[in-house]
Length: 259
Image 1 (cartoon, rainbow, N blue to C red):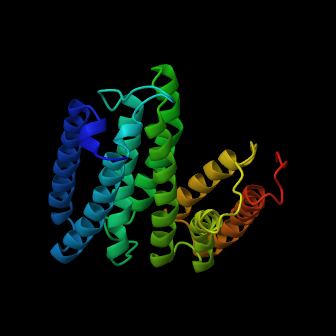
Image 2: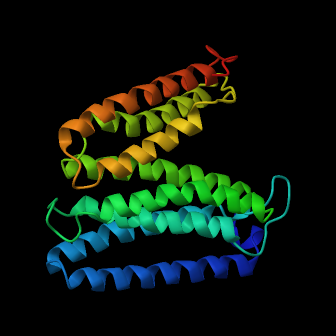
Image 3: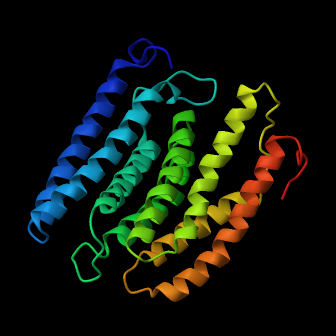
């Protein structure tokens, strides 16, 4: 997008800025609340992680504001209810991101925070699309935000799970697969090789939902590591296979696959 101010309605920029201010106030309130139940050092480390995630999320949204339109249409002047739901998802993921910088303690008040917030984010992931269709506001921005926040969640939550001893380290191969896929696709474009569209898939979205549900459950402090490790193996292998299939598809090796 070249020149946000030139291409995006000013009212839309101000509304996004208002949302960022509200998110900042919520973050300040959360930091103050945590300060009453956790040591100050942990509270501020959590706040740094959450703030970093929020800055990325609103920066991403600002950069893509010109896409706040239906395919081929002109930008809307409001963010829309569906995109607002997605931004709330981002706020919940920011809470999880804050947990990257604090020590795991199953008896601390923060113990349930990653599972509760990631689980709520996963539940809202099923809602934003419904809201978009119900309000006739399916936008390019919404698609981009949904994909970006899914990817962010699949990066942050598993790392928290590993650091807090809830998931095996090899589960991070799922997070790595998303970025390796994007890197491979970008490398093909850079080298001038053909990059095909992804084929329709009956597995891609359901598997993502299964992963979200599994991660939310595995982050719960009452789930023992041993069964979580078995569950991780069961759910991660099909997803890795789909990533490999998708790369074969965009590179032309499996272009006609419809699985």
